[in-house]
Length: 361
Image (cartoon, rainbow, N blue to C red; front, top):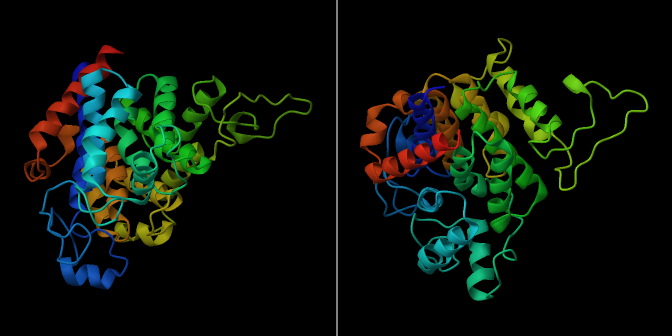
């Protein structure tokens, strides 16, 4: 892969996430699809302004939600420090972000504060606990939405990717399943930055990295998930996630995306198949499906994520990063960049991150 191709994928992934976040700002959290269509029409194709009295009310089309702002904070920490510096990240949270919220849902920058961030604020600010003791058990993709920048930064060094993503996740979310699925998503995103496809072969490539010790997931089966041989000793590395299932999901979902006997049309109804709520086990499969089905079409991938309703903001952020990593910035329609608030600043930080990734090849 040339430097130009790598930069295109890195910047595409980062900007794809920001675009997905902002596209869902207006129609965020409509679980009644009839209400969604009544307010925004049958197909949302661009940035929209939130309705009065709804989540993010008072904000404008093209702005970032709090998830986007936390992603921007993480990205800036990475590019300024030149690496994942946990002390720098925590300082920015303490000085630049926590003073702007009050622990309630409908307050602070971005129009809405997620459960995990509210809980961390309560323990860190109100209770005065140190970092390392403020994580909660929220089952959302909140950590994945910011650590995707970390995954992109370490895309070419899988062991470092896993370590940094896991450590940052554990600052605010400590549920074992959430952490495993978040790290797996980061590993998938890193593979796409490398140039691999989100297809039926990707999970086997991920499992090969489990076997060689690059990814800390436990595996008891032999190659191709066959039964281990009689008398074969089980290898278990301390700190491993208990199973590799989070790494197997992407290719299982990719198989569904290309199977002619599985017909999800229109594609936004993937939200009904995998579920509209916020939990990781709803969000990651839907994002993998859309990114696999529309591997060469960023617009269709992210807009189908938005139009699925429910927690479409997380779905669109995660899908946007995966799709952007595959198409590159060059495959993202210009109108999405033109309509995104602070796009020049975000784009510059994304390019700085790309330079760091290339220097570590």
